[in-house]
Length: 156
Image (cartoon, rainbow, N blue to C red):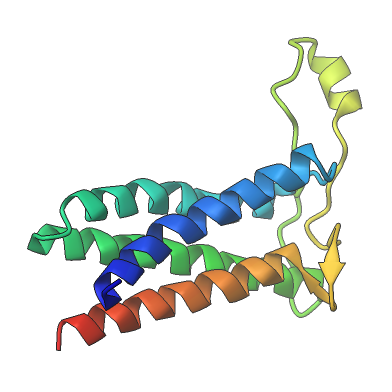
């Protein structure tokens, strides 16, 4: 696989895998996302179609542009992850209204009562002292830097 081919693969696979992991942690692990957890997902939701477009246009200049846009979206998710992890570790204050509510059954009050209140400043899961937001930051920023390096390496 070429350097640029690897960049395309990373831009598509990593956000897809992180989104699958996030959704899997909800379904399998009973971990409920807070508001900032959702914020971290939005750029990944954008990165996947951007990477697909880049892959389709890979032999054209526009393919490289979309690859850069996918890398930017992945980096933005990582930056939000840094902010969220900083809130979790108490480095700075987060937002005040940090709770989530599912669309639910249609009975508004029952949905409110059944919705777990998830605070953005309390990590639900850690490994080696790193929260899910921290892992997203590390993986996303590392991937975005790797994609940028691979693109620049190819364009030399």
